Image (cartoon, rainbow, N blue to C red; front, side):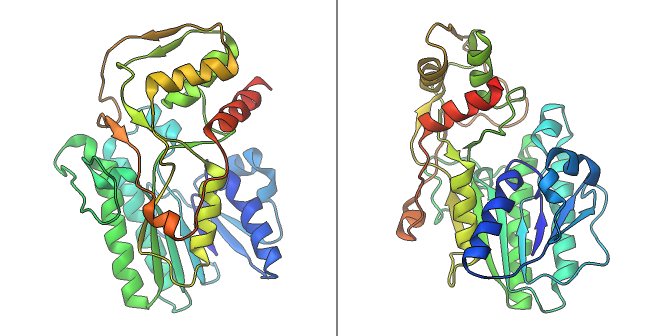
Amino acid sequence: MLVLGGTGLFGSHLLPRIFSYLESKKQPASFTIVSSDKERSLSRFPKLKHSRINLVNCNLLVDSSIQGIDPPTHVLHMANVSAAQTFSGTDQLSKYTLLSNSVALIKSVSRSGTTRKIVFTSSGVAYGDSATYTETENSNINHLHPLSSLGFAKMNAEYLLNMLALEINASLTICRCFSFISPYLPVDLHYALGNFVSNAVEGKPITIKGDGTDLRSYQHVDDAIDWIISLLFMNQPPLLINVGSSRPISIKDLAGLVRQLVNPNMLINVLDEHSEAHNFRRTSYVPSLLLSSRLGLRNRRTLEDSIIELAAAHSR
């Protein structure tokens, strides 16, 4: 299995769960994991030093090839510009370049004829301006807007990977991922939920920069990874599927829930300001999960339990 992006938020949950799954099926497997900084990845996740894992360096912002790896039967593409890079002001074009190079890399290693399955973790932003986020609707992206880089890059990667899958007769599943929570979620970047929990743990007021009415939903990354593993080994998976939670909550109510669960004495300040610093404002970003429900994919972790878990991780 070739894994791109196996050392980020999703990757930190992936390996233990996929090892467990394959062992339960008595399936031997080896992994090539692409990292832009091998030593940093090893220091963050020592379990990457494993006899079944080949961790290789490749900076997808400047390169689109790797040498000396076994042709993969399965490809899991989770690579993306990191949250820290986005927060620090990575230029918009880098988001497009990384995804373009990653697809070129997959094409270069998959044309040997061994690749049978490709799973790509795309994003809900590929829908563009939407109110329903249903898999049957067409994308509505303003491709000329400077802030469209990620959505346009994801949609372009979806198209190219679909063409590759048709060419080599492989199965492709595109997972359009929404918003997530994990004990590894950064609490010092641009994630509202991470910031709320961090402030609650530290006894600081929660500050909502907007008016607090925007709707979001949060899936625990463990559930997302379980879905992705199921789709990776499903006999007839869908081409496109949403991955996330369909439980909507406003940003203001989310702050109130964090206060209730973590620190009932904290203050909540609503500034009623709006900024497009990193992305468009989306008044609602909650996926339809009718398709995943029909496939038997369920969320087992509640938002409440996930918030308590993140607060406990941040308190250590």
